Length: 213
Image 1: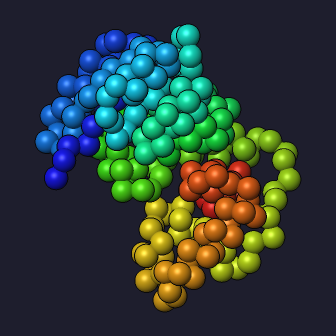
Image 2: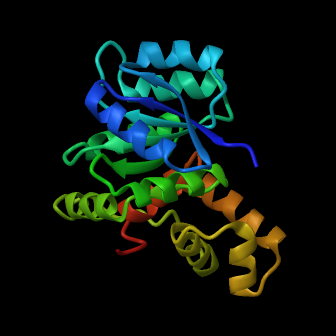
Image 3: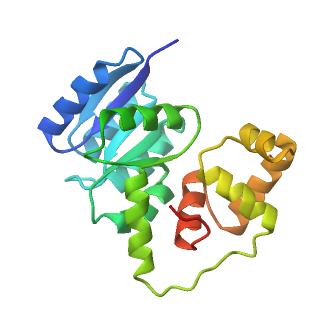
């Protein structure tokens, strides 16, 4: 099995150095490059093969949102996991819209970082449970009306399973339906909620109180 090649984009060198040491300790991982801002990140991915980018949201010269948007256009197969701090909830929707597949707090344990990388590499989305909790708390303080997008009972059921991190095949087995049926429901969910990807679906479910943590 080839190593998962990772790029770390963060403007704090000490943080990058520490994360690199921890990631390189795993036999399945290889840190293929480091960037201190979005411009450097774009230069690296043009010349370096990478599977995962761990992307700081706030960086000088070009922030993580724009770097993610441009980077996923240059390398469509590159999967971005945002590195977040408390109080940056307003950026989550922008990062998802830009193409991010997951979110981690910067002070996450390395075991959670590994779990996020493995989940996203396999095509899933990963959200730190602690981050989701803070997003929900922020939403609870607002008075936005919930929009369920007229989802059917089955669609809500499948959305819940998606939020639990299950693949289409696992959802099919769990609900005793065919994978093709799940594929169709997932496509309908993306359309009804105007979501671009699984990460967008999860945020929609949280924002509209269709799931609770």
